[in-house]
Image (cartoon, rainbow, N blue to C red; front, side, top):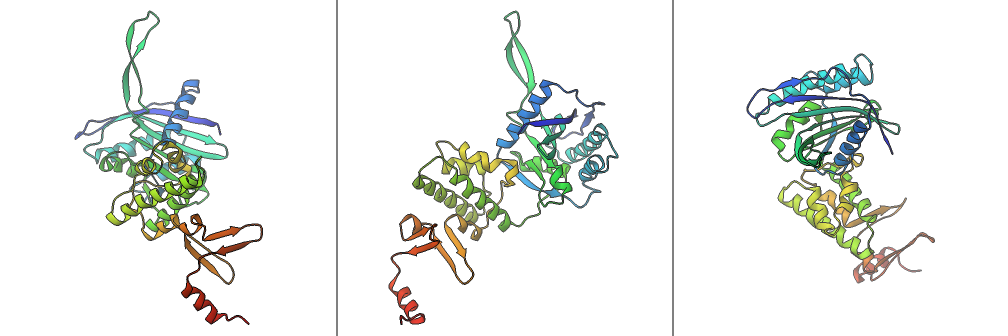
Length: 337
């Protein structure tokens, strides 16, 4: 769906490591242009593909984390325009950056974007990159542009979900250095309304859907699913933080983007960089279902090896190679007439 930029503005935070920062603020929104639309589209595409996102909601403590209050004044109360809102947000960003010695500055782009019926607030910190270009006189000259390939910090607030009272509406890139990226999380005022078990269940469901959509044979999908389970199970046992990139590269090495794209989509709500809940991972290798007076539970191998079959038309499940002790126990409870 095509993105529409309602308002956008650019500022700068000027800061070196181990030093206090300052702000350079713009006093008006950026004028509409093809360049702005292209930049917003590129930022959205880059953010959507990047692994390492975390998801959550605003901190209830708006005195120490005022971003929610600032956005509410603009998007809900219409008490502040976009420029004033961005200035207030930049003051918060500066405070949080000054609390982190290793934080550095960059160009800050803030935008109000609509995507269909959804409203988003997007913020990203970008740095300049110098490359080479050929000018009209065929001379080699320096060309300075915003470096989207190494986008360090970016966040998105789904304003529509937030105002509708949903549980998760903030997402952000965690960054390569968690200590440094924590200040950006504090700027957003994002907390995690989740338990690890719920987060793992959400991940398992997303993985199942992503694997099912792979262009592959059933056997190849089962192999990928097993690889994912083994990787996540090892993370759970060893207390290691999972990595969506590592998961995709291991399970689908010939085309990891086929898995990465649905798992890193911000709309999926899948967080990166947490230790999975071991028991909740069983959904990747075990099927469970129940009816009014019965329930079934079996490993996926029972289906792939042909011991359990479903006839959807007749709504029947057939179990083959039933062990003798199960038959004996069944016959005791339900003797044939």
